[in-house]
Amino acid sequence: MVLPLSAVAVLLTGCGELQEVSGTVDKAQACLEATKVAGEIASKAVSLANNPQELEKALNDAATKLEDSAAKAGDTTLREAMEGLAKSYQSLDISDVNSAIDAAQRAAADTAKYLGDITRACGGS
Image (cartoon, rainbow, N blue to C red; front, top):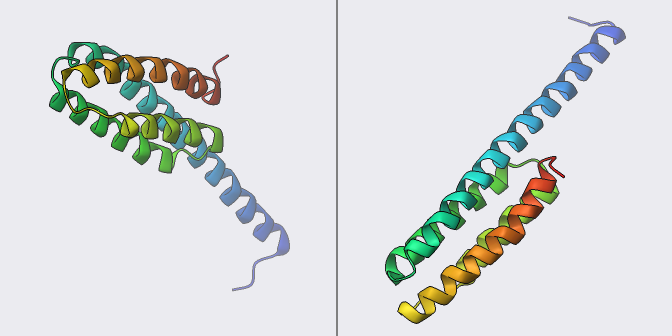
């Protein structure tokens, strides 16, 4: 079957628009996941500061969720912000209660910083 050139153009245009819509949906989902994860860590970090193992687990879980969502984000700026926050969580050294307290404070500060980047990438101000 041979399609007229105009039909091929319509099909190609439709595919491009479908990819654009799909990218927008992926970005929206990544934005929702990033803000959810950041919000959870912000509330958990302080309460887990006296429990190094639980804090480390929460930070590692959050980093994994951020990396998974970043891979699907469809937006370079958003992906980089999510990956940066994930790396920040992974880089925290938690070996005892004192280091856990320091890590909780740093996680809160880094979350606030990267959440600003994420919000801007998601279309906020």
